[in-house]
Length: 320
Ligand code: MLT
Image (cartoon, rainbow, N blue to C red; front, side, top):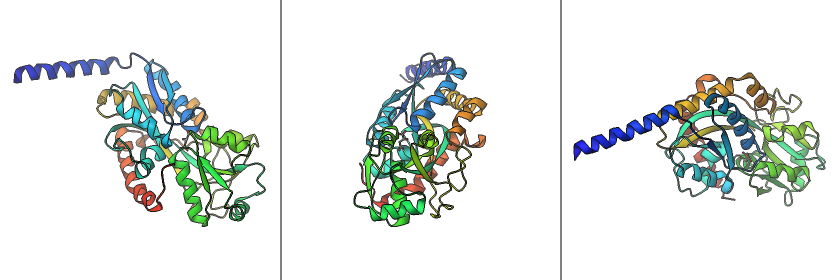
């Protein structure tokens, strides 16, 4: 019996090993847990396109939306651990949601880290018809219009950023949840919502085109892609710092060789000058090379959960 078990185990190991050697032999799906056209979708498509050049197969984005991204992440957790499903996520989906939503999976143990991806500073933006011309005027306007004013977003990232702005200013305003920040931005441009504390890469083109107004970047330095926008410090709101880091994960049990191949393709993509240019133009910040290993993402993910979960729980943020 023991001999038979050994033979079965060796055969399974051999099949997995062979699969890892030839991987990938068919297209790989990246599950983006937000609507098409938004910042998560854009980053996944830019990277997937370049990863195809390394690994020879297409990387197809599937937008699985709902519950601040937890529906899409749950789908990835339940997928076969064979390297053909990748979970895209960020501080909101892969950290904050666990402190807000009752989840059917364990964020830290049901997924294997692949690589840290570029991070996205947030930018405070408003509809153009709002009269405020700078952050101080915006805060005064929000104070005078608290009952009716509303911010919007899709993930727990923009939600936390809005709550953070409220706690720093002592304001209270409504939060309207969307399936993605792309549709939220469309409604901001149309004047249906007042402000978004948005990921810079989502708003950048609309700011440049003059369709929305930008007040401050939640980073300690100005963005090279938008040097006219002041930092929160410069605009008079010190301490308003928040950057939405992102990552790729795969289902738990995915063979290490496959994780290594995916990691190598991400590293190559992020080192490609054309890709770098596209990401930088969107205001995204590329992590240094030593932070791009699966182990570095695993350690960072745990540290961020330890940092944010108590803060989010004490803020008593409710599911939207
Ligand atoms: C999106 O792609 O729509 C965003 O990442 C959602 C969000 O986190 O606010």
